[in-house]
Image (cartoon, rainbow, N blue to C red; front, side, top):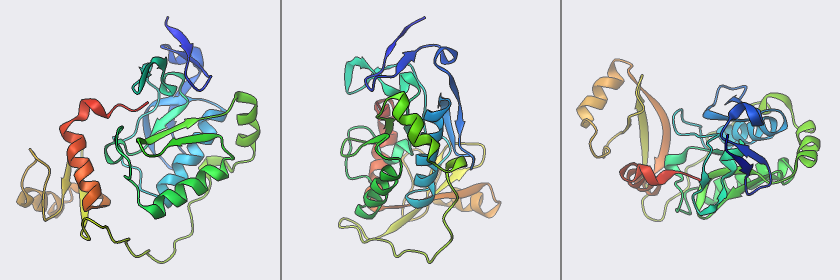
Length: 239
């Protein structure tokens, strides 16, 4: 059995059971394949991910990662925080490793508000790996913070007026993404589709028979990031 310590100081292992990794899909059903370390880690990361989903950007099934025993992609001499079950990647294709500026200024402000609510327990790799959120404190500190959080990741915010979309410097248009039922293929409503996907008429057919569901609205800049991410999927691995 391979083991060690991830760069945030938590025990890591290639055996999930050895470090207490549990399935991670918070109380609202947000799925993170691989899971995370149970107990206080799951409580705090569950809170962060729930709040990201409701206040920043809807979590998309199939775009999120948890435990994986591996080296840190950006520093292979260290074990990744994923190897200890203390990190998650949120909507990875929209925020790939090596890219910055994948969230709007308003979203960045909200992310830091959420991180303040967990009292510094979680770091976000803004500017170069923006999918990635990791535990940044030791077990005793985390236990105190976890005990202060509401159960189940906190309540969903009360519905309010729809915010006006922020203008993008490069492209003022907003694009609607759709995902086919039973498939992770993502389609973009006009004026374009991803390379290698069926044409717009096929998407119209899927929508007409209820076989495609809306999953996200993105700016032109985010759409460019997504297209690039899909072309270089093997390089998407986060820390």
